[in-house]
Length: 362
Image 1 (cartoon, rainbow, N blue to C red):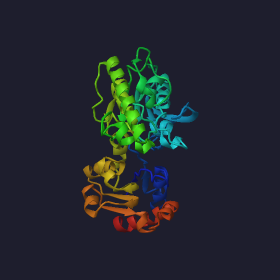
Image 2: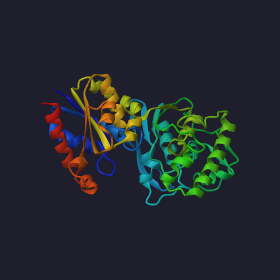
Image 3: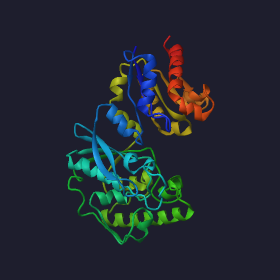
Image 4: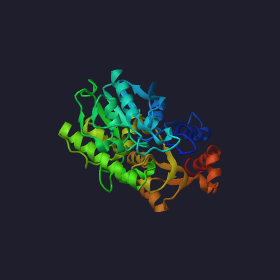
């Protein structure tokens, strides 16, 4: 009997690979296969590397312009770029909602294009910026007119954009975008209004960022002839989704489905008798296309039972069953103190694994 262990990270506690390793320690390596997953946000790069992709080191700019070490992953002409790894909130000690940019993500894409990769997968999520992807476009050769300064707020004075010198290999590249966000670029459900406050924006910041994104949209529409500001996903990652749609001609795919295809999930699923997935918190967001729900959907279609493990579970038993899980196990059922549960997540996971073995493997 093969057990396929395919969890996402337990945010703030364990990486997806660490979660998988703790579970596999109980079931044994001869009986289990570990396949860390992600939904396009942080952890996507690690998931690709765990599945056999090679990490390619790159020096690029973080959200506030500091040069840092990052990487993309590559295999057989396919490159994987994780926005969170270079332009993410985790890169900042102090939030910078007005000035953070996506420039470093553009540098990673440029590096992958320079290396000859013609298919690039961009994982959106966890971004620190609300610049509509203007920084990304600049890193790929675009020129902004009328702007001094960095970030989304500086775009308010934008008078035009010149896309004539974009990276020469960009036009022939296939750009796939992993994201589950369906928000538009502008308005009450847009990037600034919905996600700006999560990145430290106060009400005045949100107003200024909205104005900057509107100016950016006007300039890009004039340059490309495309009006995609209202497209689902244009507001993803502080509006970087908009740049990938309008300038990079990218194609959006549900994040977890794109990642599962990338790492060969279905080929491993075919030989499994039980699937174990999970994430830090099983909640309403899980049901909206997060990694465990995507794993469960494929397992159910294949007729293979799947169980979930989590730090905490906020779903009702009916919701758990409706999502396709045979059962859900939460570490906080063993250790109710959140701090202790997170600190001791590894040993608690191993205890949960023994319970899963007793409940589902006989």
